[in-house]
Amino acid sequence: MEKLLFTLSFGFAALILATQAGWAEPGCAPRAKVLEALAQTFGETRRSIGLVANAQVMEVFASAETGTWTLIFTRPDGLACVIASGKAYEAVREPLPAKGSPA
Image (cartoon, rainbow, N blue to C red):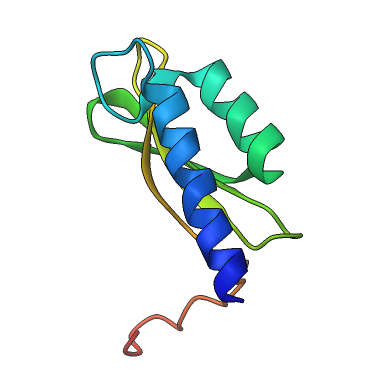
């Protein structure tokens, strides 16, 4: 398990370095390059999407095989930035609490 975590940490570092090359903002690159790296390096696919402030798009990518996940924000100009990444991704589907009950 330690060997896997060690290997994954180098993989994430390589992804961040690869997306930084030639770009002014650390951890950012054109969205197509980030998605290609996530798919080829980690086997991650998009699992969720949403809008955030300043018309940015937030996306979570994950792999069922490795359990890795990555959170990216994409700006309106197409630049995508890796915000966070980790392991042990698990999709959860929980019912909403009834109105008036504590969450």
